[in-house]
Structures are given as C-alpha cells and as structure tokens.
Length: 178
Image (cartoon, rainbow, N blue to C red; front, side):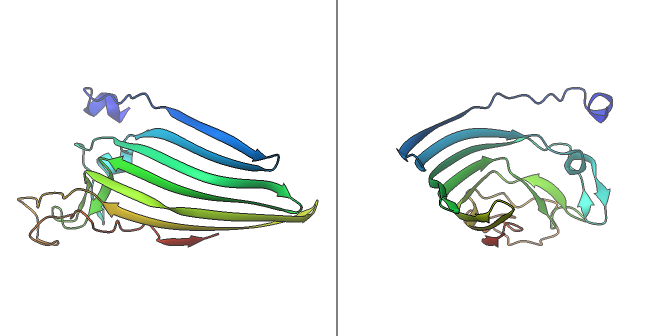
C-alpha cells in the first residue's frame, strides 16, 4: 500500500538464476558446485522507519548478489553424514546502517561487498529416534568499495569515507557454531 500511495514510480523486478552440478564419486559421496543470483528489495523498515536508531531512506536500491559454492558431501556412512563447502558471495548495493549519517543515522547502499568462507557440518544418527548435529562456519565479510563521506555528515567516520574498501562488515560473525 505504501508503495502505491507514496512512491508510485517504484517497481522492483529482476530475473535470477541458479545452476549447479553434482558429481557422484560413490553411492554415498558427492562433489558439487553451484552458482546463483539473488535480488533483495529494501524492507519497509529500511525505507520508512523512524525510531531511536535512525531514519529510513526512500532512495535505497535493491541488493543484488552472485553466489558461488563448491563442496563435498557424504551421506549416511553408517550413523554419520557430513559436508564441507567453500563459498563466495559478491553483493552489489548492500544495505547497511550508518550511525554517522544525518542526526540519528540512516540505512545506505554501500556499493560492493563480499562474504567468503567455509562451512563444515557433521550429523550423527546412532538410533532411529536420536540425531545430533554440529555445524561450523567461518566467514570473512568485507567491503569492496568505498562510500564517499557525506557532505552533511556529523563526522562519525574517518574523513576518507564513511565505509572503506577492505573494512569488515559489522554484525556478520567470523566464527559461528550451531
């Protein structure tokens, strides 16, 4: 409804694809790879929120991503199964919150970023009624472009730019266990 009432010129659409291949090495073991494209429109809160943490931004562009993954998977080798995969996700127009933008901060498109890492999972099912699992993910999330320093900024960031190429992206855990 807000889309049509306030910003009728908006219209988000995109076609995405996914392709992959699985090479069966054994009846229980695979080597696989895949490539996929992603598209995420800004959320209502990113566009319009007004709260203690900042303001929305109606000029946000959709995020786009290209994801690559290659991995090795073992299925039901006795009570065990497992997977190891290496991934790379390149994002364009990633939306991040900049606390130094404006009076209370604002969501911005920060250009290009990358998440790269490895994920390992192990599952054990010793009985029909009992299953346990473990997953570890290592992720490096870095900016790949510099966002210019806004003219009306309150100088929260360095003078070279609000977000620098090579900076870590906040709120993305480097090590994650489940």
